Length: 359
Image (cartoon, rainbow, N blue to C red; front, side, top):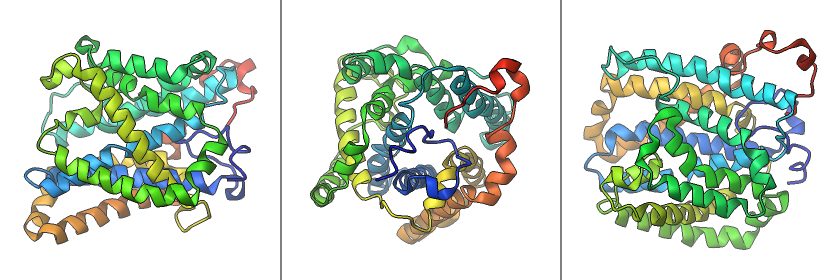
């Protein structure tokens, strides 16, 4: 992890124009593998009902794939200081793409979800766009969390309070933003030596029984725990639970997620691989794959594979992996760069256009 310090200013989820040799292969690998799991989890969704084994895998993957992505995003947000250049990058990297993709998804779901009256609104994120809104809020508050003496306990307290506050509502998916906040703050608190620590041989060996225990726990939890807890988008009362279940589940889920994120990061390769370059395009894969997943679900594609059991599940898993991999490639990034990484210099005042942006 010798280049971790030199790349600490690069956003975790925004592609970079830096030459490949200046990027940290470990983090690019981690981002690609995390986005791969996101796509696989989404393509599994229409096949979950009545399949306890698949639901256990779904619970297991959802317990750590977004937390891992968010932790890495927090780690690369450590240098955000609200300077004009970095605020400008925040707007062009998250706000403008959010407006574009939220509008596109709202219009697309009128067809895919059979909801022709669905309104186009920027206050109610559709499908995957919540993550852009969340990253904007998290990164904008990064200087505050760095200034606190005990940022992680405070963030856990905020998440616990959100878990007992159904009145928060759905605006900007704020419930999810607050409940996932500890993962981002944890990333802000990490240093390169922490990532070196999780990649030690002992941690890799111990991660095998820990991950296995997590899979067994997921299988046990399927008939007992509402999967709504995994999405972090509802308060305890909205899930039919007593208010005190909110703080309890906040701490339990954070602990489980943290353990599985460590297992995941322990096995991420730190050398350049065939998929390392794809780590620069994870935001493209994330934002674009949702259209494909909703298209498949609407056309009934999964019904063709359902009778084939585990072979059909393997086929749909490979399809999801291939699709998101293709969407992270350089040709796709060049094609969609105007909407994912738009150039909107005209929005900013002239004296701010030349300000250092940070990467």
